[in-house]
Length: 247
Length: 307
Image (cartoon, rainbow over all chains, first blue to last red; front, top):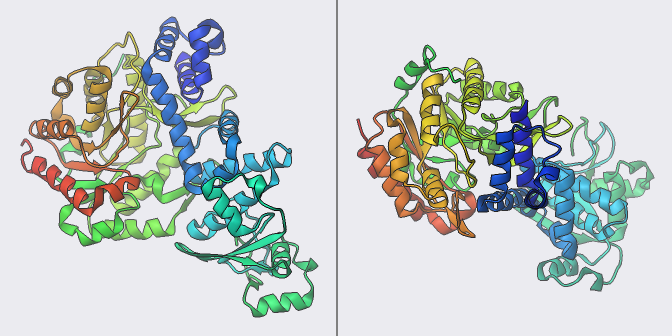
C-alpha cells in the first residue's frame, strides 16, 4: 500500500531536516526505503523544496521541545552546550507522543541511559530527579517512581527527597544565570520537596536526614536504624501505607 | 472513486443540532474567566485528550482522568452545552483506527452529552518502518485525491458507528502544497460532506493562513465551500515565522480573519456555533478584557448570521 509509505516518508521529512536535505541532494537514495508511486515520489521531491517544509520541520521541533521545556526546564539548562545535540539524538531514537507526560517520561529514560553510559555528567540526572520530584507533587506525574509495597516504609505522600552533588541554592542560581555548572564546588547535599499544587517548598536538609529518607524512597527502609525510623515517624516524614500503590 | 450518496440519517443529524452561539476552546487559563463572565460565552468546546493521561494501547486502565481537569469539565457540563473537538482520530491516516480511543470518546459522549464531535482533515498517527504506530508530532495534511477522500470517509463512517452524534470535519492549515492534486480543498470538503453526511467546521484562521502562505483569495476559497454544511466556525490569532503565517492561536484575531468570519457567518445558513481558540500561554497578553472583546466580536457575527 503506497499511501502508507507516502505518509511515513512525509512524517519522516517533518521529523528530520537532514532527510529533507538528503532529498534535495540525492532523492533516489533518500527515498529508496519507501514504496511509492511515481506521483507520490514527485510530490515528495516537490514539497521537500518548499519553504513550508522548513516551517513544518520547525513546528515539529517546537511541538516536541515544548513539553520538555515546560516540565524539565532546569534539566534542559543542566545539559548546557549539549542540549541541542542531545535533543536531536532523543528525537532520532524516540518518536513523538501527543501527550506531554509520555514525552517527558521518554526523555527521562533517555537521559538516564545517557548518564549511566557516561555520555552525560551525573549532575544532569540529579537535576532531573529534582524536577521530577517537583512535577510529582505539583501535577501528580508519577513518572518512573517505584510503587510502594503495602506495609513497607515510605515517605509521606506529599514529600520527596533528592540528593544533589552541588549546594542546592547555588545550583539553582547557576542554572538560572547559565553559570557553568562545573564551576560549582562538589559536596553531598539533600533537599526535601514538600507540598502540592502551587504550594511547594524545597528545603535543604542535613545528610543525617537525607540519607535515610533516600534509602526509604528507594525501598531500602530495612537499612535505616530503628531509632531513626522512630524519629522520622514522629516527625511525620515517613509512614507505612496500608495499601500498595504509587507514592 | 468516492461514494457520492449521503448515508441515511446524516442530514438529519445536522438539521437537529442546537444553535449554541459563541464559545471558547477550553484551556487551563479559563476557569476563573468562565465563572466571572458567564454572559460572555454560551458553550465550551473541549479537547477530550487534555483531560486524561493516555498510558498507551494495551495498558489497563489505559486512560487516567485528571482530577483537577475533571472537576472543571463537570462544572461546565452541568451548566452549559459542551462540544468535543478531537485530535486523535487521525482521519486521513492509514494506520488502523484506534478502537479503544473511539470507545473512550463514545463513553465521554454519553457522559457529557457532547452536542457534536469534530476532528481535523489530517493524519497524526503513522506506522514506522518496523510497523509500530507513532505520533507524527504535527498534524500532517494529505493531497486532495479520491483515494484520500475514500480513506477519510471510511474512517468517519467507522467513528459514527461507535459514536452516535453529528460529526464535523475541520479544514487544515497546511504549509506545503502537493502538486497534481485531483481536487481543490473546497471540492474535497464538499464531496466529503456529501458522501459522509458530516458537517464542516470551517476554521477561517486556517483559511487566512493558507491564503497568505500559498497566495490565494480567502473569500473565493470560502465561497467555493458549500456553506450550508458549515455548522461551526473557528476563529483565532496567529504569528509569522520566516515569512509563513502560523496557526499559533496567539491571542486576538487579525482583522482579515474577522472579516472572513463576517463573510462566512452571513452565508452559512446552518451555522450553530462560533468558537474562539487561544493558547493558554497567551492569556496574560490577551487578558480578561481582550478575551471578552474577542467573544463580543464573535457575537456580532453570530447575530448577523445567515438564516
